[in-house]
Length: 144
Image 1 (cartoon, rainbow, N blue to C red):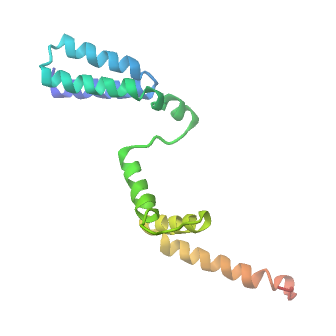
Image 2: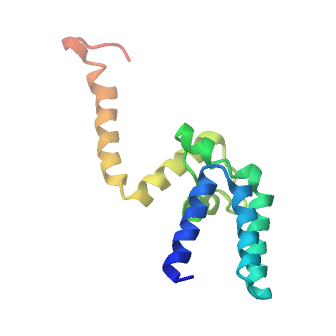
Image 3: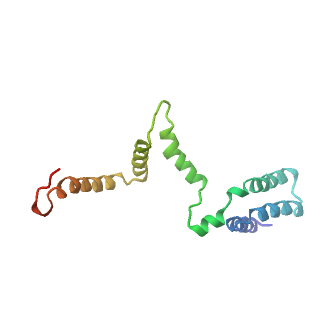
């Protein structure tokens, strides 16, 4: 089979997994390894992949996630979450309350995404409204 044909086959298997057919894909991988006469080394990789799909089938609810509009995590997303959360929250000796941890993570996300400057301008405008505009509404000085 050509590289192009192999890539198409892999893409087809990925679509099946996304439709909730991981057990079917695992069986197909094993069948393909037998049909194509894979060497023991090639067969080991195919069997490992099929075993992974079988062992993780309860965690591969992609069809439900997609139907509900939920995000599907990838290694890139998981790595970013680890960098964003674990590397900051898991510092030796750190003690985080829920509010403090949430505030730090929000700031870290704003900085990482490059949106901090825009957020800070928004924050200052809102604080100005909260402190000044609300207090002097309709020309009246309201008690603090």
